Image (cartoon, rainbow, N blue to C red; front, side, top):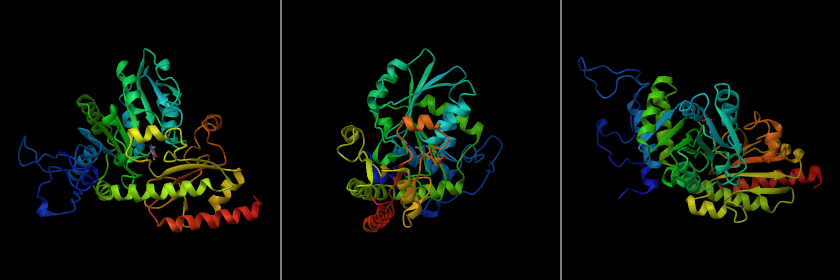
Length: 386
Ligand SMILES: *Cc1c(COP(=O)(O)O)cnc(C)c1O
């Protein structure tokens, strides 16, 4: 019987007592390894190919996503860029219209130049099958999406992909493996920005590619050692340490997010609260079926751009910063931060208006978070006479 996921964050099934019994896995800060003799290897030759600390992290990540292999890279974008190496000029991908801004930038400004073609649609709600061409190779989704929180049916999309011999690739950063396991629902490849919930402390960048397909694992391992954006031993250790508390962090952050979403709903200055944990969210029922939680990311719109900017200027405990998934609550302005490189028309079409804010709710005491929001909103209401 496989252990529960909260335990797998802390212990590998096949844990052995070695490294002098060290409870915290050692950092093998070495670039290369000596060979015991000609034609012999300790199992490690050179750290670009493999390093014991990184390997330990990869085993944990594979276990959390129920994959056969996980590759740890130097950032989430390095993982997505490596994934793109699976494709060749002339290939076509169907991608979610609402995606992490960096992914859009990579697809639009790098992959296209390399001859790869994309169709962007709302995979949650538009007809994917109708967009499949002879040269289509993959469907690439986020669920929930960043930042509009659209929820796509992973199992149904996987069926469509299988029928047409396409890969289904899911960026699972927003929910983390603690709340959602796309491979179990039929996806071929899962991506994580380990910088976010997996690391959890806003102190290291990392990325993961996880698969349960032998053939994909082999191709990716070859591309990985060849292109070299591997995670360093020290950063591997930081992410390993972060993952140990993934379960408790996700539970607490989600509880806080629910409280913040409910609070925001009661504000006259707030026009929309987009959080999949609210029963009125169109993805609520689907999330209950395919995930074990709703996560800690929420998006909301204010009555005006001025009010949105005022919130960013007045927060103190909550910090105005890019990124998400850490113990600290952060608030982001997608228009000029995460989605600045997405063309304005596309941004607005997707619903990212100039009064839209995204919040990554952390694990602070919720009382302090709500007090902070009350102070900020009262100030703005007074100044702007809402
Ligand atoms: C942050 C993020 C990425 C990119 O990861 P980095 O670690 O910043 O390179 C990709 N996808 C999503 C959903 C993200 O939030």
